[in-house]
Image 1 (cartoon, helix red, strand yellow):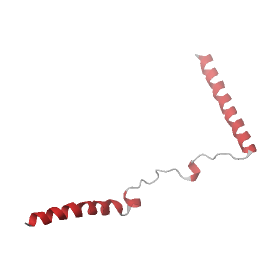
Image 2: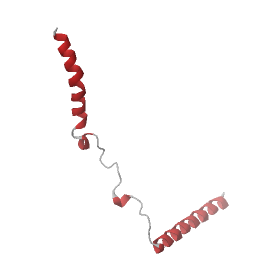
Image 3: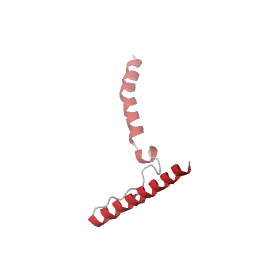
Image 4: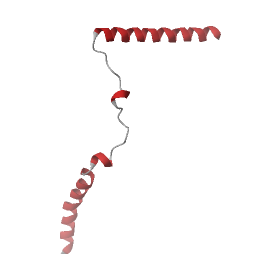
Length: 77
């Protein structure tokens, strides 16, 4: 009855081997270099009142520039 020992070994050792294979060295095996942006590439949220006001003015100026460019294109058409 050697088959029952082999079956028992497969039932016990296969999950352990799979967990060991996929559980070790995860950072190097499943990592994608450059996937997460570094701190220089992310948005910086303003916290001070002056920073918030300058950001609002920058956004308004950008919106007005885009509007002017859009109106210019529509006038040319």
